Length: 388
Image (cartoon, rainbow, N blue to C red; front, side):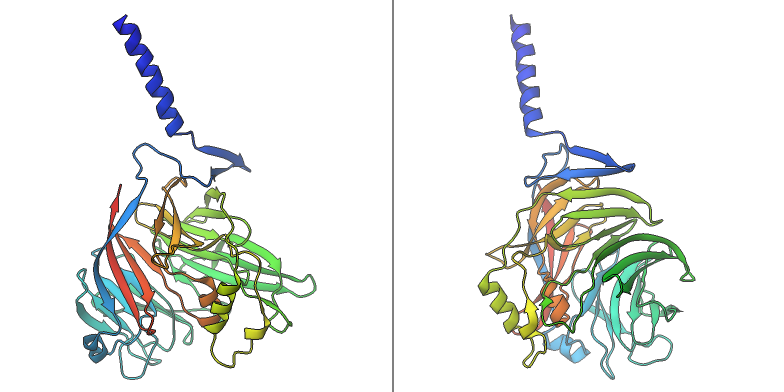
C-alpha cells in the first residue's frame, strides 16, 4: 500500500511539474526553427524567472571632474571584457573623443582627437568595443573605421567605399552594413543588412525588409518611421522590424539564419498626452512638428540587446510607471521567453526626430544603462544583475 501511495505521489508531482513547465511551442518553416512565445513567460527548468538590479555607481557627465577632463556629453559607450567602460562624445575641438573608465567608474585616460589625420575623428556616428578589447569609431564624415587598443594607441584604420553609409566590425573580422534602396516606380523602399568581408566585399545579404516609400516632402509623416533595428553580441546577430508584428531573426556571424523568435504582445495605445509630450520635445520652429501623424498604437518593440550568455532583451513599448524605463522581454539563448525586466530608456521617437539614442549594455553580470537626466545631462547607471 505504501509503494502504491508513493507511485501515486510521483504521478501527481509529474503532472504538477508539467503544468507549471509547459512544453515550449516550436514550428518549422522552410527548414528554420521558429520559437512561439506568448504573453506569459515559459517556466524553464534551470533558467531564471526574474532579474533584480542593484545600483553600484554612476558615471555622470555633469561631474565637475569630468568637465575638467573634457567630457561634457555621453553620445555612445561600450564595455570591455574586464569591465572597463569606454565613453564617446561628439567631437569637439581640442578635447578627446573617447574616455576610458575602469570597472569601478574611475577615469583612467582619454584619446582620439578631432581632425582628419591618423587616429583623429571628424564625426562619431557609431562606437563600440570588440575582440581583444579594441575600441572602434565609425567616422561618418571621414568615411572610415578607426580602431584603438584599450590603451588608446591607434591599431588600424579602414576606409569605407563611397557606396557604404556605414559598417560595424564583427568579432570574426567581417562587417555588418545597412543598405537602403528606393524604387520610386514601385513605391517601395528596401532596407537590408549586408555581411561584408574585410575588404568590404559582399559576402551575403543577411536579410532585407521592404515597405512603402516614406517621403519627407508629403503633408503627413508617420511619426514612427518604418525602420529595421539590429544588434549583435559576440557570435550572434539579431535583426527585426518594429511594427505590427513581433519577430526577431537570429543569425550567426556567417549570416546563417539560426532561428526566428516570435511573441504575442499587447499593443500599447498612443494617447493624446503621449503625443503632446513628444511634440513638445521637438526643437522650436521644427518643420515637421505639424506634419507628424501618430498611429493608434506604438511599435511592437523599440530596441534589443544581448548579453554574453546569449540572453536577448527586447525593449517593448511598455513603460514602467515607477521608473520611466522600458519593460523588456527576456529570452534565453534558445529564444524562449523566460521573464520580463525593467531596464533602459530607449525611445524610437527620440532617435528618429531628436537624434538621442539611450543604449543599454549587458556584460559580465552587469547592466550599463545610458540615461538622460531632467537637466539634459547624461549618465551611465551601472547595476549588478541578480538572477532568480
